[in-house]
Length: 492
Image 1 (cartoon, rainbow, N blue to C red):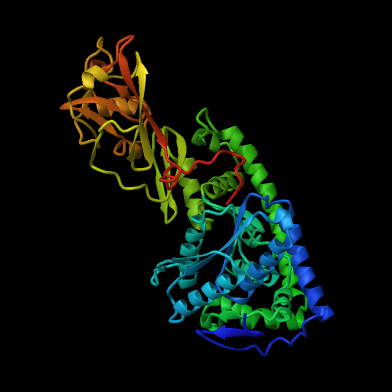
Image 2 (cartoon, helix red, strand yellow; image 1 turned 60 degrees about the vertical axis):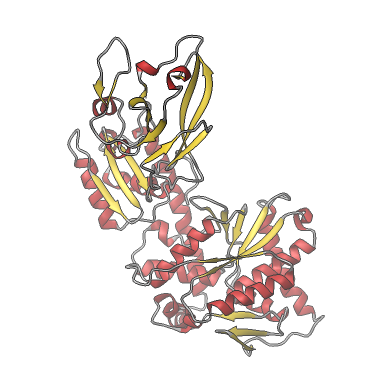
């Protein structure tokens, strides 16, 4: 690495902010030992010998320090030394120097013998939430696709103080004021960890100087038109002149807020057990029995469990008003960028994200499984059950979407009935009905998904070779079209 320097934009220059530390100096050993000890203590109860850990590597000082320290831990045979270390660099394409930063990360990882994966993302510059928030959203979406067991980020105590102050100034509630968690689950993918969160930024700066590390500097970090930069470069330094312990005090307050949020989650969990029906979903009639504050707390918990961002207080109040005040049989629908809150037969459904596109038709040619949007349709040979293979023989078999007007006879003793009636009686929610697979054999409707079943004319007789058709949601394909998460699941 370059000696005691950092790169601004695409060019490197010698850093003047940190004093040089002679090799072999006792101070160098002490600085390295403190950070490594903090890192090792954090990982000791988490990282197993057969697991993988990926570092979110921006190329900035803090992420370079974290990667360097992890390389040293691995070399020191920490946790058996068999765990796999890698790095991920997310290239946002917002700076003319983005390519140079990616090249720096490639060079750094090659020198440290660490595999690097570069992910290029597209940030919507016109995002209503702002450029910073838009970049963060696509970055964390990329993190969620990381195949590692753990994804480590290099946030430190000063970052925590900045986050808490920023959120408080935006009117955050208890969850927001709790700041960043040292460990949390992503909606999918690895667990996200911040092993250096209790260390001050100066500890990372000292480590970088003591080890003569080089890094890149994002020129946008100096632009105080961005609110976080203004807090970091203007407000927090001024606060520290009057309140010298401002940063640790804000970080300490975050810990208090986090504890309060844990208590609120426990209350919500207990309330959920009281208001959930047989299917595990919240029943509006029971929700109406909670106090206003507890009902809102439960709604926040339900949305957070489904991976939603914390909703605006006004939106949450309106959601509560519509849900609690809705008449029997009403089906209110409330939308945000994260998804929809819907009601069906008096029960609450949290629909997250956008469901995958569906094909208009898929021909079945004997495969064991067929992809259908977020579902996998399976075909399993059985005897005396399911669809009769004899009846299917010689016919073209297709999976198709509903067109309207379909009729199905489920029992030879009963007349054909409209599929619309059958779906209503089966309690299939209206937003799911148009996504169900319908299996046609020639010109006849033979089977309908969603628990409806097969037509009587195609039912397998006793002792006859049959075909059992099953449906399951593929974790790899689903965007959590139904956002329900069982009580007790770790909040994202």
